[in-house]
Amino acid sequence: MTDKSQVKLRFFTREQDESLFVQDSPLYVPASLKRYGLSEIVNHLLELEKPVPFDFLIDGELLRTSLEDYLVKKGLSSETFLNIEYTRAVLPPSYLSSFNNEDWVSALDVGDREIISGSYDGIVRTWNLSGKVEKQYSGHSGPIRAVKYISNTRLVSAGNDRTLRLWKTKNDDLKNNLEQDEDDVEDGKTLAILEGHKAPVVSVDVNANRIISASYDNTIGFWSTNYKEMTVIDPMADLGNNVSTAAQKRRKLALKDGSIRRRAPLSLLESHTAPVEQVIFDSNDSTVGYSVSQDHTIKTWDLVTARCVDTKTTSYSLLSLAQLPKLNLLACGSSARHITLHDPRIGSSSKITQQQLIGHKNFVVSLDTCPENEYMLCSASHDGTVKVWDIRSSSPIYTITREDPNV
Image (cartoon, rainbow, N blue to C red; front, top):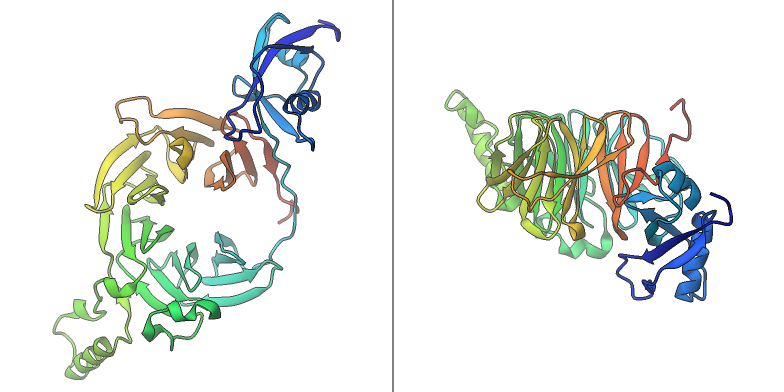
């Protein structure tokens, strides 16, 4: 095959954008073309005023070489007709800054103007985008494993002390939205302690007025964001009558004036047989939840009836979970170092794994999706990298490594 040889191809796209439309009549292009040259052709066909960079996929594989090299690699003839899918190119992630913490950072969530972190020193911190700590929340007696914004005036955290805590956050603009008796609570103080788990709580998710939590006690907790909706826990109830009269009076007074805000879950969901690593709400239906566990299963929950309605079994421990709602897929990170994609609508008796994303060299412990692109996903692993994926390809688009290898 020489540089003068040509390849017959057709461009198409699945982007839901009318401006990204190309006639499906075949074109003959030089086999030596790479991504840049193909991008020029598509820009010309679309008659775009301002050039747009594109990526190209052939049979689900990102094109990173010339068309000629691709044909040679696949053992194909230059007479082969290629269907090439094009999509707007994703720019490589760029390093901005790092926020130095006093201990291991084990949980993160991003708000409108702030970032919250949970650390192994047991402290929840809010950061501004300049890397300055705005507020510290102290109260947990062990490492923090999960944090999540509930609203601009509240957040929830969970950790190895087996509890969840509701916190009041500072937002003067929305102060009037707080419960009346919370106006006197100082910003950064605990509104309520949520108890019920018997082992570390490692994951939380929030949807409207509900919280779900995953624990190493094999259960999932279902809670309200308003502690007044949940049953009050009497911290001395287990002692029965084996307490002094004075202690009983103090207990009654404390419960009466509401100074002890300890609450039980609305329900505890039981079905897993090993530690639950992550739980999430369905993005389109707040009455449905999904969980993954070291027992190798993905479970679907009806949160109204507190029942497991579907179980999908894999051959490896599952450590992380994210939903691609527009594609009806669940992405699961595993101890087998890969990410698997599953359709929760498919019955357990059918083939449950739709696709595998392979590239990490250690456990995949965290996943998140892109709010701007339904096909994009990022993953973090114990191999020290974050990978960015377009799930239409089985290999990552970019790999982010640590800026300082000594960290």
